[in-house]
Length: 211
Image (cartoon, rainbow, N blue to C red; front, top):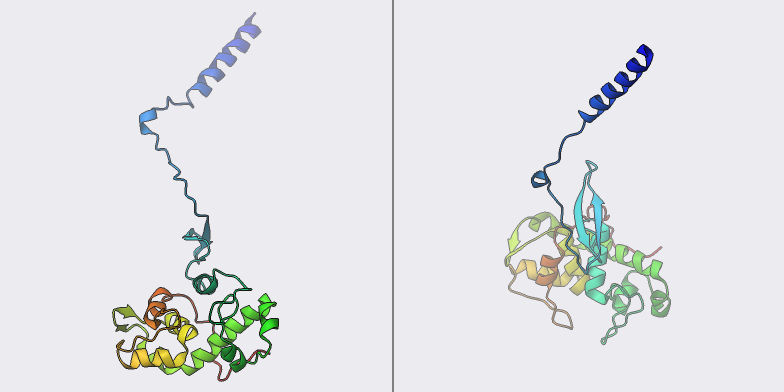
């Protein structure tokens, strides 16, 4: 009898001890996270300290270089490698035939059929324009011209739109010469829309060509 009494007493003590580990939840103190549905897909990107805190919607990828490429491609062609516009500009990044020849591409049909070549051509043209505009990048970066803060990525994007000469004319006239492409898009718009991206990894190469 004594052993049974000790056994049951032990069980009761254990139940009482476990019960003390639980508290009554006051629903007034609970914070709920509401999820707002959106039609836009999004990506999270890690920063250097490992915390994921950059959210960017498709087709953009934040301010990284991949975001820069995709933002320009979206503006130019909605990212379509086979795109030919009404005035003959070609591919995802809308190259003119003369621009292609300047970086060593003679066959425009092959260019349209080769996405990897188009991606390479974009980087090569950036390298070429960066060399041609390096003095302007050094001098104007961080300055405000016609209400736009000038950055390297903005200068390179504007050069992609209208050539390095158009960028020079805009900056040399403090924004008075608002050079535009065949559809009326201005150099100023590209300087503004594509400013602040990471393009430091692009090497400035004189007369850069496709290998």
